[in-house]
Amino acid sequence: MSASASVWLVLLAAAVGANLPFVNDRLFLVGPRRAPKSLAWRLLELAVWFGLVLALGFGLEARQGQRHAQGWEFYAVAVCLFLTLAFPGFVWRYLRRHRP
Image (cartoon, rainbow, N blue to C red; front, side, top):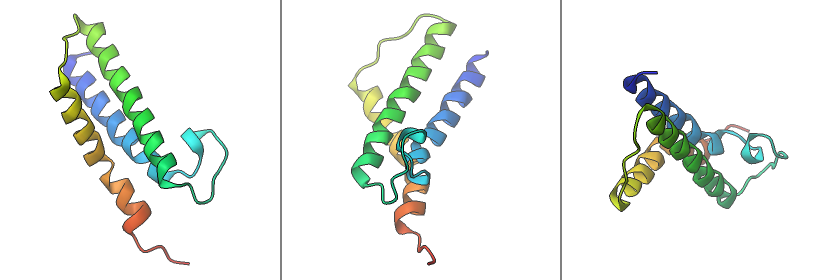
């Protein structure tokens, strides 16, 4: 897999993983269905999905060559990007007017 394809794969996985907690009422996609899943569960799922996407990115980077050490700035930017990608799901769940 080329470097460009790896970047697009990680970005696609981040966009999907960031929105999954907000569009699904199951715990981690396979758990029991919780009718009003609380925001705390959604934030926990968001953190787990972030870790999985980060692991995917590190794995693809290691597969292409030597992994580079990252400082705290990288993780701060990665969290902000992940939260930005989660915004459509958050709007759909909490800000959109649902019809009865």
